[in-house]
Image (cartoon, rainbow, N blue to C red; front, side):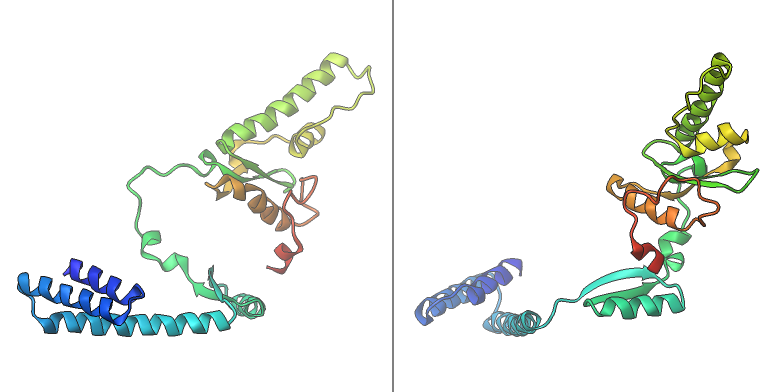
Length: 238
């Protein structure tokens, strides 16, 4: 039946004069009879195809005269979801409420061995167990590698101070605010203080995700120098 659907689609969608249309139609009928199909079968396909094309044309005309509505799925968050839905409706964006926790794929266990939370890449959080100060960072490598770099920088600063024996007034410039905290406060950091809070596979989303997570930390606990490269007032709104 596939060749007949193809030929009928061509018959109805390519502009033809009446004579050419009848010629093509008769060719389809002759081909059908040769292969054991009757005229009613072909006419039934043509009728259904015409109805479908008419419906698509009406839908297209309606869409052209109406503002385009975009849809986006957002995890259901109670009353907050209603406010978000109302706010975005002003911009022709329809928010579809969903509960990803109830999806079948989230309930099925993967056959692969699970990685520890610190053996992933993405957005990580280091919380000082001595004072609850928190640092949010991003890494394309394993979070454990990035933690080692923080600790190494703090160790190098301590060794430099020992060598200089406080004879110079030169202040060590830290690349990491957290490393500076370790050095100045002498607070020990272990692997238990590290956690990957969001695994990000697409690198272009790292800056946005990092800024969003930084905005969640109270100012009194924050160890980051700023709010990230992609901070927006919208984060507070959300």
